Length: 235
Length: 191
Image 1 (cartoon, chains in turn cyan, green):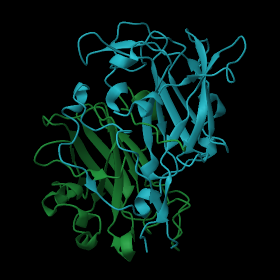
Image 2 (image 1 turned 45 degrees about the vertical axis):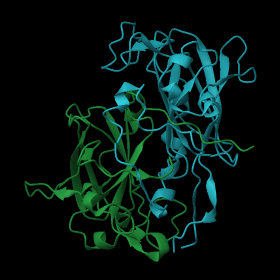
Image 3 (image 1 turned 180 degrees about the vertical axis):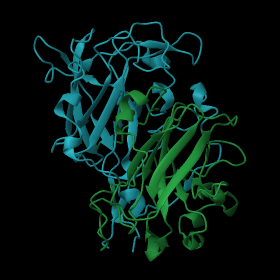
């Protein structure tokens, strides 16, 4: 077996702590014991890969999944999946889910008093191309209230799930929209101490991907952990 | 300046919408070699209450101890029908069920072999980033020399090893306890 490099650790403050008291659900669910450090092994630096044909091209257009068109503002959300060395991560599965334009999820436990849209599921998938690019066409999600604290509202966001090349690069995150007045008040968005890291969760309005007469473009690049320069001591 | 890793955020309560399409609770398809095992468990929070909205992802080697990944260059066979990835959600009572095969041992640090194990990622509302743990197999003689179990306080090792179900069905039981005296060991992978 050749020697294999591990993955770099993010800078302090750029990832959330598990316990974040302003986010009430973390109180009973975040572990109380310190995480146990372990060396990287072959188990962690390998990870699942998916065939490009797992996802049909239509799975990335959330406005064309039903007979009719969903209500709301059509948008294009696109970007690249990269590693910390700016290398594109191709053939990576990207999964998204979101509320509809009224701020309601197609999910049985979402009881928010806002209408469902029969033409919008809010779920999509894509596999990145050779340059690490992905592109979704969707509807701008609405803000919605939640029960974390008095008069709590989530800023508009789209959930992203990305695998990357290894078990240890797996990432689930949320993409936000520029200028959202709710961002300073959201305990989930604000769980990351480092302001720059936090603000990278806000997509950028983008003329280049804006489609004339069709849809505004928002760009959201996702960066996964880069490789260590030194190989680990795996045989 | 090179970019930094994107910040993690919680999957929230509605992940089923986006993740369920890829659920897989049976990795042991027809033609896959290895001992079939079924695993049953529960996820419990700090009050001991079942967590009905968790999703677990499994990553494992095949019965020969080979990962379906380009960086596993061991001279061991791959199996076309075995990819090693599972995704399961807990039900209303916090339970999950998985059928798979027992993986073979894989190499570890400094040439030490690792005992057969599953890697598990756990996501749920309330977790701002995923938890990472492992499930080992009961009565496996290699557990005693496993280099990762050696990183763990011996008093807590049992949380990583499944037990045989009481009904002699051959099923395994392995629970995820998020807090408290029996809290599961979760690993620091620098996430």
